[in-house]
Image 1 (cartoon, rainbow, N blue to C red):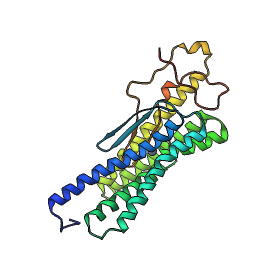
Image 2: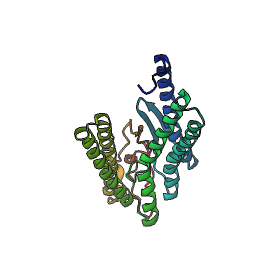
Image 3: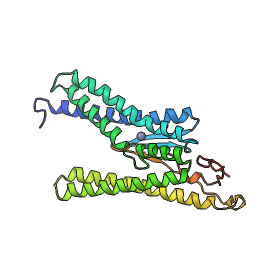
Image 4: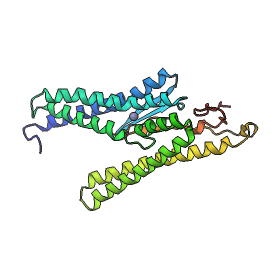
Length: 256
Ligand SMILES: [Zn+2]
C-alpha cells in the first residue's frame, strides 16, 4: 500500500472525493466547449456524466472554421487550467498528506485528459482543431473532415496495437485493456464521422428537388467523452441539404 499510515476510512473518503472532483473536471471540460458553442448560438442539447466519463451533445456543427477552432480548443484549455490549479495546490501541500495525494492525482489526470484530446484525430478535440485549420485553408468542409477522420482511425489502430503490446508482451493488462478499449471507441467514432460525411457528399450530388427524403438524427445522437477522450460534436445526419456555394457545413434539416 502506498499510504500505510491512513485508515481504510480515510482511503475510502479520499477515493470518493477524488471521483467527485474527477467528474467535476470532465464536466468543466465539456462546459467550456458548450459555453463557446452557445456564444456562437449553437444550442447545447445535453451534458451527461456517467461512471467513466461524459456525453456532450450540441445540435449542429459550427458555420465557420474559426468557430470550430475556438469551440474545440476550449476543452483542452480548460483542462490545462485545472492542471495548473491542482498542480499549484499539490506543490504547496505537505508530501504524504491527503490533500497532496488528491491534488497530485487530479493535476496528472487533467494533464492526461487535455493532452490526449489534443491528438490530431477526429473526433478528438485535436482532430477538430486540425479539421478547422484544413477547412480554413482549403475552404472544403467535407474533405477536411475526411482527412481528420482518417487520421483519427490511424491513431485508433495505433492505440489498439499499443494496448495489445502492453497486455500480451509487457504484461500490463490493465493499461493494455484500457488502451484497446479507448482505441476501439475512437475507431468507431472516426468511422461514423467518415461515413456521415460520405453520405452527405452523396446527397450533395442530388438536385434540390430530389432531397425531399431527408435523414433524421437518431433519437439518441450523442457525443461521448471519457477519462482520456473528452469530445464534443453534433450529429452529421441532420445535415443533409445540398450546400453548393457555401463554405461551411449545410444547415440542419427541418423536422417534418
Ligand atoms: Zn473536449
